[in-house]
Length: 287
Ligand code: NA7
Image 1: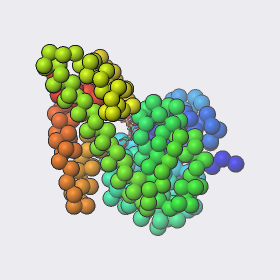
Image 2: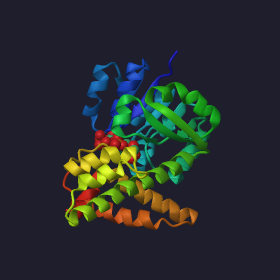
Image 3: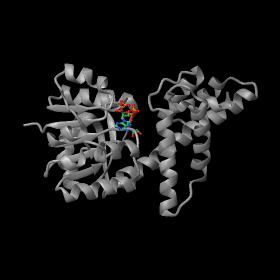
């Protein structure tokens, strides 16, 4: 029999993940701060939890997918929070991107309750979430990862077990620093080429035939050339991840100078923007 799943957080990522769990036949209870985002799930057979606590109390397998560390603390330890309601023996997997430090704090609280915790942030954007093709970076115990496989298989195409709790978040922050820098570098190079009087599209054409080719830039260069910044992965969340990576670098005693510079560029664009934009909108730094 399939375990009953609880899902907290139905944003850009959590919404399609919930729909995929329903399609795969998992009994699902959902909760989202903005309740209307659960309408589609309820119409497709999900139960609507009254609070994070209510969702956790009924789940054999709890998933959280919220925006940032503050949001996670809120749904776990805020009013009617999920953590204390989790059943002994349950698995709890957090797919949000937060700090490794917070992941370890959650893991310690779970252990006290006999709950098995995985920090399992993802990459793949809303596109990967919709197709059930996310890639998971996981910290936690190997047996728990094994036991989580029926759920992972529905949501993703690949998962990496990277070490104890916190390891998933650590690799995710490193990964996103690379993605942010790649896109920022392209924006910078496009501005150079266009300021020198050439078409940006020509740079992209050459780049994509060269060793510098990247599937990420295949997609993002199109957004940047067309000025279409509908969020697939929002800039505000990329900025959050860069901040978390810099904080981690400080904690572990290393430096990330290029990430620091990219953080400031992304921050300026976020401060200028009135609407929610994709992170490829870093291009707007150059006007
Ligand atoms: P979104 O689309 O911004 O969705 C964020 C979700 O987090 C959404 O369900 C929010 O509820 C929820 N949220 C945000 N703040 C809170 C608080 N304080 N309390 C409860 N719930 C909250 O993000 P994505 O789905 O793109 O990304 C999710 C994670 O994956 C994130 O860590 C990324 O970096 C990677 P709302 O609907 O606004 O009421």
